[in-house]
Length: 120
Image (cartoon, rainbow, N blue to C red; front, side):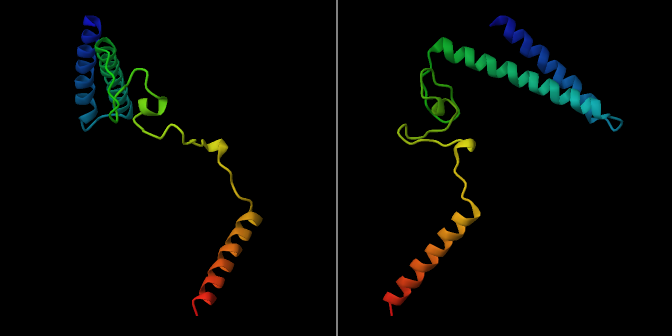
């Protein structure tokens, strides 16, 4: 944990140094890239520190955005879904063919036409 804190401090110094270089009028694209890289490293280290602290404390929070040990995978990612509801992924989505879509629209039009006739 102490080593991780030292790495975080070094990363903060690196971010400050890169920010100064990137904010100069003569800054190059490489300077901005180095700043983004240093920020990502700092955020990664800080996230690692937070996760270690939660594991040590045995955190069981299920609030949005918190890591929960032993929770449902969808809850760990900050989303809460009913466990009995099936979540479809992109490859499982069923797309209608052009013919099926046209038939569905035609059926909807027919339902609309019959309901308007009944209301007269």
